[in-house]
Image 1: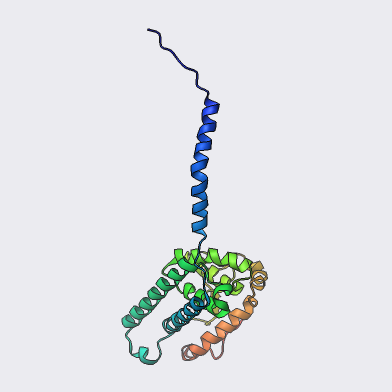
Image 2: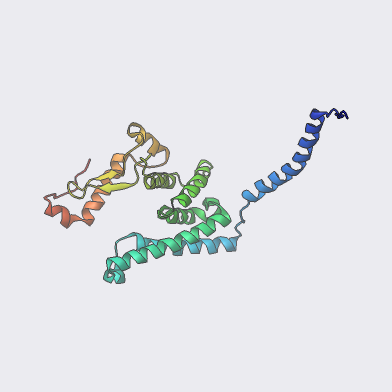
Length: 238
C-alpha cells in the first residue's frame, strides 16, 4: 500500500510558533526586568534608620581595621584576629542585606556621609571579593550620574584589582618597604604609570607622588622607633 504524504506549509508553521512564543516570552521578560531592577524605596524614617545602622557599622569597623587600642591591647594575636573576623563578617552580612534591598546606597538615598560609610564597609570586605565586584559595578553607574564619590570608587576599584592579584589603576592600595626605606609603594604595581596622575585627577585624587609622600610620612611616624634603629631619621620621601 502506497503511503500518502501531505504537504506542510513550514513558513506558516514557523510564523504561528514565533507568535505563540512571543506571547509567552515577552511578558516573562518584562516581569524579569521589572523585578531585577526593583529596589525598595527609602522613606525618611527608613533613611534615618539605615544611616544610623551604617554609622554603627563603621564605628565597629574602625576599631577592627586599626591597631588594638584600649581594652583590645590585652588581646592575644589569636583573640584579636578572631575579633576582627567577627566584625568584618557581621558588617558584610549587614551591607549585603542593605545592598540587596536598596541597591547601591548613593547620595540620593543616604546622603554623602551615609554613602561614604556604606562604601567604607564594602572596602573592608576583602574576604568577599565577589560581593565587592558587584558593588563596584553598581557604584560605577552611580559615579557617572554624580550620585557617588569618584575617589571612593577609585579606592574600591584598586582594592578589587589587588584582591584578584592584578595591577592597580590609581595606586591607592599600598605596601611599605619596612626593612629598608619605609617608603609607600603601590601593591603589585600600576596598569599605566604614565597616565596614572591624569586618571587620579579625573577621579578627584591628588597626584600620586603627593599621596605616596603623605602615606610614607604617616607610616614613618607610626613606626618611628623601628626606622630610627635602621638609621632612618626622617621619612624617605619621593
